[in-house]
Length: 231
Image (tube, rainbow, N blue to C red):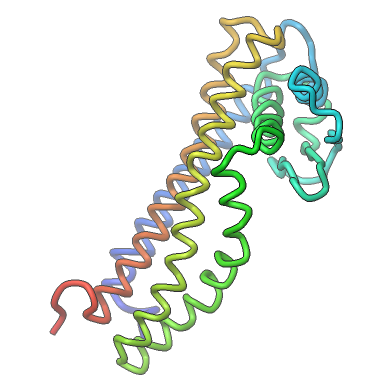
């Protein structure tokens, strides 16, 4: 079984866990550090997000609290910008950075930012790829049928495509947040270093996801002989 395949462990499991774990640790470390640093102007995450929405002329998005740790997100369907407990009412540098990043997604939506719309369109396909595609690849290995693995790989590639399209969406939202927090007077210019560190660390988690998915795809292709020569 491939679950106990040393090649799988060395090529996919360990690198994936290391990359994802490191990225996650950096986000939590940066957020926890700057969640203890209050902004001079005292604006909360919710207030900062609302200010950016107002400045962008967006009046159909509601900023609401949600439960969870770093569960912040923007929902294009419901037009809700949900901020976690540690962000919504906090005036910390970390909270402001996260809130303004999510506001950046709302601005992308209002401005018809193409990668955001492409990502939304790929959500159903990515769901199929992550579930059915992965299982088909496993079945192909058990059956020793490269063709079946190939079909699964095509489906699983939809996950990789979704994650790749996600990169410019997240990077752009981060860039908007970094610029607008100073332009809107939410924080002073010298306070932006903390926001940069929090958002840069968060961006790495999306890069880590792409790498992990790519490693998984390459493993199945190589293990089945579809990529390279395997005796």
